[in-house]
Amino acid sequence: MSAQILTELARAKVNLDLTVLGRRADGFHELDSLVAFADVGDIVTLDLDGPAGVHVAGPFADGIVGENLASRALALVARAAPGIRLGHVRIDKQLPIASGLGGGSADAAAVLRLLERANPAYADRLDWAALAAQLGSDVPVCLANHACRMTGRGEVLAPLVDFPMLPTVLVNAQSDVPFDKTRRIFAELAASAWNGTPQPVRDGATLDGERRRIRDSSASAVAVFVGYLGQRHNDLEAPALTLIPSLETVLAALRHDRLSNIVRMSGAGPTCFALCRSLDDARAVASRVAARHPGWWVRATQLG
Ligand code: C5P
Image (cartoon, rainbow, N blue to C red; front, side):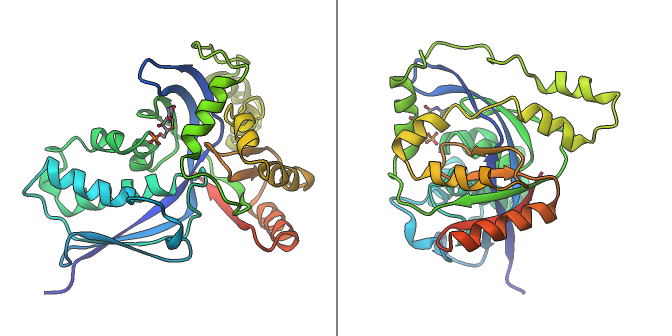
């Protein structure tokens, strides 16, 4: 019998915008964020003939601190369904760690997808989305693995149909970040002028409104999203700049390039992105930034 190996790409998650609507009684924050996925990511395989466990290799394998979220995913499923078929998970870690691209969450979500594929009888018997939410706020959207509007703590997902491919450059300066960066950035936000009470979406921009405005014009689907996103923000950018000052250099390097359209931080950072008009433009921006900053992680990609 041939070895049974299944593979998933744990794609980089990008928060195209992120509004913090309020702080909940449980300490988590209510969010509103458009999330899309890049065509770069970690490669996650499940060897059904191997012993249950997780092995991490690849350029960013050494950066993982504490228990791997993928190991927690495996243990969580084993507890929830004692008879389920597990296996050996191998992660080829291509994404920088703790970078705002949801790499650890995407790995854990890929493990859930692999286990669901390996155990079709459990597809309906386990609540995979609920298991994902137990692992972390970004794991449900990574499990869905397609462009979504994400609300609640991160677990309420509305798929974005007809989402266009958005040519994008991703940049991470690979500077040291605290391992509990996300918690500290939310705490920093609470300590700032932001008053922590639920806010309406500040600028009144809505994706539906933008779609209506563009529908009768000749603008492309890319223009719809870029028009909308141009009016949006990432509320975590200001507190992240306090905690990770090198972020400013990355934002400035991307803003400096005339082919960069919208420039913003993803998630709790420090990876930033620039949306471009075409993949050729994104490649040109990426090669200029990489030439000027050889130590940075830079990728031209398409979000979708
Ligand atoms: O869910 P996750 O483990 O990724 O969250 C890390 C930390 O980020 C949480 O402990 C919390 O402090 C903060 N967080 C939050 N609101 C969210 C998501 C994360 O306050 N919606």
